[in-house]
Length: 203
Image (cartoon, rainbow, N blue to C red; front, side, top):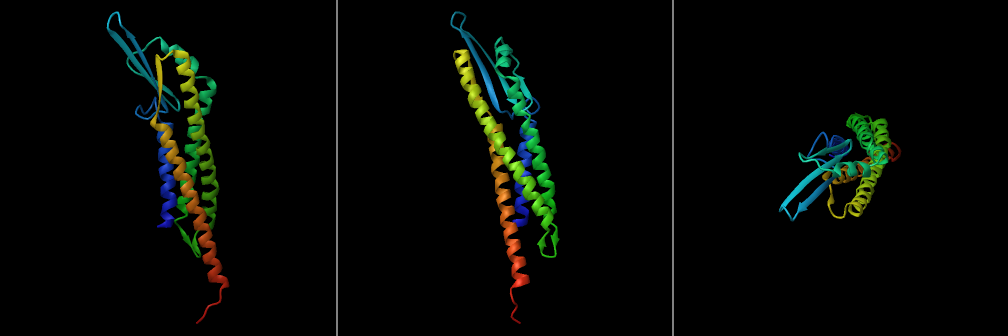
């Protein structure tokens, strides 16, 4: 059971990161944040609502496009877009960790194969660190943009957190849990080898 747990957690993390990478404009229900425009006129008793959902590779607008679109594009800088490119890199590393973790299921003479376990630990730890950085970047990015937009729009624009941020948090927790399981597995395997080879047998 412990052998299956690490690959399963890495698979869950990879799936979450892949969905976030393919978020808006490709998968509309998954997004990092949503900008909503609310403009109303008391004179004509009418209102205009529009929204834009931002994902790792851009955004998708609702059917109604308004003049605020230009100001939105100005607020989302090239640095922001460059920071979001890290998402597919984290997904790629987690996929490599998944591949190496599958080889852990092959048992050698002394239990799990050692080389795949070490490779999983190295690649998985790198993926976990990068995913943690991605989560922190997303949280800071959304918080900063939310402040800038509230300040610049006088309340006409509102920014809401998207589900992709919490999916990345789930992927981060899954990867670190998998790495903890891999480390515990390595320690138990080393103790088992030491016990069978060096401890005297009483026949």
